[in-house]
Every structure is written in C-alpha cells, then in structure tokens.
Image (spheres, one colour):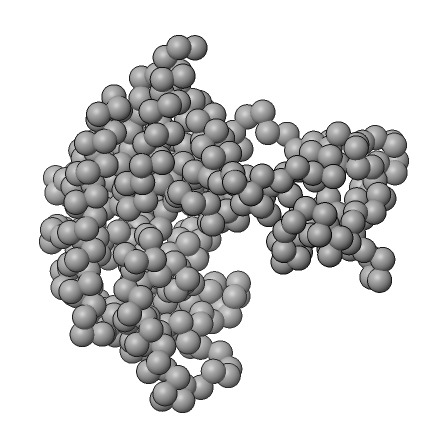
Length: 469
C-alpha cells in the first residue's frame, strides 16, 4: 500500500499518516474502504504494531478514519460525501497555516532536530532536582486524592512571593495565583480585562498562542513593532492615540522571538503611557530566570499598579510541569481565581508540590547559574554560525533562548520550514510570530537546539539552491 523509508529522518508514524492521507485525498482509498488490520499492516511494512496503532489513531482523530467494533478501520464517509458524492479533498497546504504548524510542533516533538521549538533540551533542565522532589513526595505519603486549592499550593505561593521580592517586586503570597502554565495565566487575565470589540496591544513579532487566544475572544489585536532596543516608542504612541486599547500584553525582557530587551527609560515611559491612556500592562516575564542581570521590570517599577505580572516554572524545570503564576492587586486576583475555578476548577496540587520541592532544592540556584552560562555560550556560537552563512541578526542579547535572523536569499521562511520538516528538522518560520502573517525571511532559532551540524548542512545547501534559482 505504501513505501516506507526507515532511513529517512521523518518518523515512520508520520510517513504512514501522510501516505494514507494522500491515498484518501486522491481517492485511491475511497470512502468506506477497509484498511488492513493493525497486525497485517505491520507485517506487510516491517514496522511495529505500536507504530501502526499510533498512525491509525492519529487518522481517526483527524477525521479520516473510523474504527468499527470487531470490524477494523475504515475510510470515513463525510456528510458532504453522502450528499454530493464528492471525494474527500486532500488537506490544503499550499500556504502557511500558523495554527496547523503550532499543532505540528507539539505532535512532532520527536523530530531529530528542533531548532525552532520553544523549550530546552532535557539535559539542560533540572532533572535531578525534579527527581529528588518526586522521591520526596512519594516518601512523605502525599495525598493524591481530591482537588488542589483555588489559589494554588500555599508553600509555592510563599516561595514565589519571596523570589519576586528579590526582583524588587514587593508582594504577599495572597497576591500570587498559581495556574496551569503561563498560557492559562494569560488566558485568565485576557478574559478578565477584555470583551469582544476591545482593542489590545501585543508585541509584533510576538507570541503566537497569545494572538490566537485573543482572536477567539473577539478583540482587535494591534501590533506594537519591536526593535533591537525594545519598542518603537513613536509608533506605540501613535497607536495609542488611534486605538485606545484596554491592555498591552508584552514581554519586555528576552522577548520571543527576538530576544530583545526594553530599556529602563522605555519601561518608565510605558508606565506613564498606561496611566495617561488608561490601559493595563500585562507583563509576560517567563524568561526572567534566564537573565543573569538584575534588571528592572514593569512590575518592580510600578509595584503592580496598572501592571499584571505573569511568569512560569515550566521553562527552567520542565515543560511537563505546567505551573505558572499571576501576581496582581488582590481584587483583580480574586476575579482571576473565580475564572480559574469556572474554566478548570483548581490547578494540580501534585505538580505544584513538585515544583515547590524543585525550586527549594539546595542546588536550584547553582542550576540556574549554569543554565545562564550555557545559554550565553550557545548564543555566541550560534550567532557566529549564522553570521558565517550570511544571516542578518535582529539582536544579540548574549542571554536567553532565541536568535531572530534572516538571510537575504531566503524570502519565505515558511517554505524553508516545510523543506526542513521533510528532513526531520523543526524550524521556527517568521510568519508564525507576526500579528498579520505574510511571507517573510525571518526565522526564530532556539540556540539550545541549534548546534547540530545537520542543521548547518541543511541551511548551507538550501541557501546555495536559492542563489542558483
């Protein structure tokens, strides 16, 4: 039925899924056709039954197959097929679809190379500390039944407040709400501050998940241009005069994707503009622990007046530890806790206890110091390699996870990303991060995943091909 190529970097599961998708789209497999059994397919193609199970399951989830009890797997007949007798259309993919690409990032985490991802490699994380915390939780007989607390595990809230005080953000534990990662925190804040039709400012380029979430809320998204030095302040002031936004969701420090950092004068001016134009600053500071410099934040300068502070433990402990938090004025925090309960009851007490054990481990600070040094070294190394291939760097922070770069011979990084995916390389195409997506040569490189020679051979080969087109 299919020709699988185990020597290729594309996982066999993905090869099966895409192969069957193509056969269905071209009607070589028609509606109601029965597929080989899992064991028969595995035997015919020399793969494990587990590989076939996962591939069939993905196709069922995508609405292309249906599983019938005691009968097997069949090509699904869609309602439009019954009505019009039309064929199942192949998935359109002539242009870049940012939402589809985001989903692919998480479904294909097992791609061999991931220079476009937004997390750290396993061996860069504090795995030993997390394992010690896990063992401690198991040995002390932690109650694993019931729910957590609406505001989250009190010991972690207290530890968070103490850590914030070291950054000159003076809060009590009562001003900290734990969430399921920073994404839930941003969602809660947006639903509390905004209603359909409101205008909201975001960094441009900026955080794709935030933009998707805001669009689902029915608000008008207005992009504030980022510069290597932070914000384009004249452009921001002009936007404020026209749009009268309710909030500005922003990353002043080590911003994704550019890794640029706003200066102290800009932060002061932002606070003044928020007061003058009556909007709230939502500071997403999830990369703070990767910054070796003790620099001010909007929250430290404004002490949470007109500022809501969002951060997370997931970036430096583990992406699987979905523990984020919001720090805000008490009356706003109470509303956020109510929204949290409405949408998902409580967050996980177990993961919050696990995070608490990790960040209070005696080696935690040493781990953070080593991580910052390792990131700084990778920043320099990857920046030199990109420069050697002729890439223009937006900004060199010498800290953080990302470099934002483009090559004069690459005009569409989405097309380059499609080529890369076929070779087992996950890139971060610039369109993904734009408020108004359009073809662009910009790419986001995660420096922690960008030192593999296979990436550089791919880039060099494709740049050379573009030069000869």
